[in-house]
Image 1 (cartoon, rainbow, N blue to C red):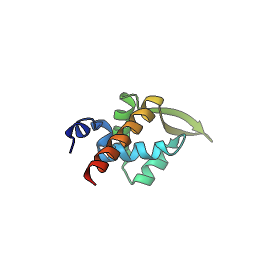
Image 2: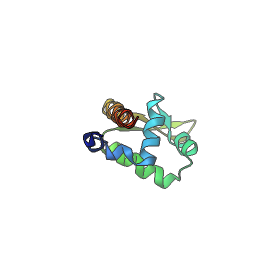
Image 3: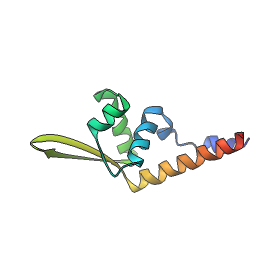
Image 4: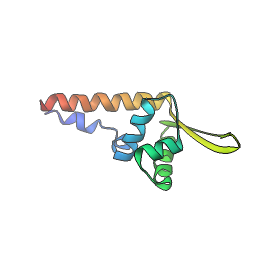
Length: 100
């Protein structure tokens, strides 16, 4: 077992809520805050904190707009976030391969 792979895990993404958010965003161009919240069954407060953490890392872009006179917040992976998530997945795959 190569311990270097474990040391390469992006701890920012590895937290389960952030990993779930990143996984959802990796599968779509952008997703609304409410869709993420409802899909992952998170509270508004917890989701806001997790998105802010990912946004501060440069992994997620947040856009605020209005849709039919109602505020709408959407999230999308940045190029940096997409690359970081792909590296995270690659690292997990290497760990899994080692254990087979």
